[in-house]
Length: 342
Image (cartoon, rainbow, N blue to C red):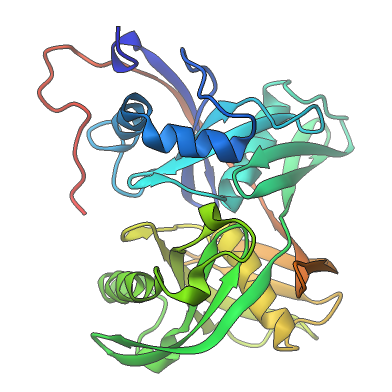
């Protein structure tokens, strides 16, 4: 029996600031590896695991912008769980909105015990390292989650990339994945739903222009190399005091659109703003998405990351359960694993 034939598949679905996250808790096979990072490599090389990802992500069971994760064992007893993040094009190295959703899920399902009032940490091993979802409780209800990420830093600045709308200056930064940062004012665009087609086009052009660039090589772990997404940002008006208020749309993988402000992408933005001196200690990045949802980020501290200065970011948001699904695969269905239209 193949992995797909072992259906039905049960999932619990959440959204974080509008971005979906489909959780698969039980897999009938173990994905080999000593660490989550090794399991990501094994999953990507396994045609059956890839086919399951496609079944759960592609239409008609998903869509081109679906996102999810397979729950796997953590690297050691220091974490509560591990996760392999996936999307329509493969397995990603980091996912902030998914980490927030997993924090809510872990508490709501009783996997991690939480107080009626107070804070509990859900520690999660992801391919880029160990992260924490700090879950805030009030009257036995999750009210917010602070995603505490791996050290984040700037990799390169002022890279000039030709696009269909002209040349644009790009900064590369790392927030668990490598992102290209683009100010849309240089393109004559704005971060708005009516500009989405043009934003996707530019996002793809920048990603693929820089994906194999030397600056997009991770300095310590080549498995984390390559440009994961393009953050197209703009100023969203003055914020209170020293805070920064921006709006963005992140175009990741091959043309996927993040409905949230992008958790790991927000960490990459924090790294750039802190390096520019725009985000001082104690200040916040108020980060809005293309659909009007919001994350709020701050710098918890600074560390040395392989000889470069890095920030320790926290991104606060909230995830909400949207449903539970039982997916079937009819052996006579000609549209398996499915299809995508972008």
